[in-house]
Image (cartoon, rainbow, N blue to C red):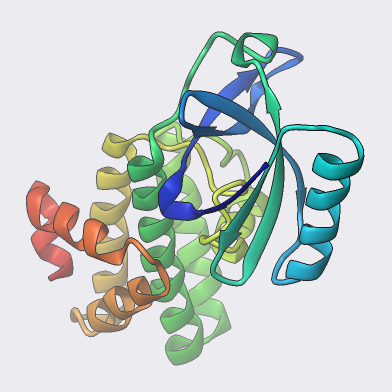
Length: 218
């Protein structure tokens, strides 16, 4: 039905009616809603084959979404068939979560590479304590922190469901922790450089310029 780019659509999360702790990604395009059917990484041919089979042979209304190094197929649904509760942020909010994850992961890698394994373990424990106190969704234990530090931030299906206030808290705390580990702000440049992986890096940088603690990362 459609082959679309990321900037053409909006992706939001809705609550799974069978599991209230789970979020389901929904793609929205021109008033229509689509649910994720399959993710193909950078294998465009497989994604295109499924999309053509569903649209041409089975008469399904589907979207093939093209993103950097990732292709996915989405099938049309009625939003009220899934949930009436819309929980997450618009695509702009999604980009902010992705940007903050890139910054967090860059800081963690610097600690691991420059300060060693013992300090990286300590950083994860400090991060867990902060996230538990701040009631960050999807971070209940150390394994969940490790998952956050290892997921692909560019995959909007995997990223956590955190609102803007949580993101500001996270950036403030990550800067504080990193400064305490390094003794200076040398980690900032590599963290901001990591944003270049994100197509919407400009909007994340613009957001950093607006928020009170954003100057820590400039």
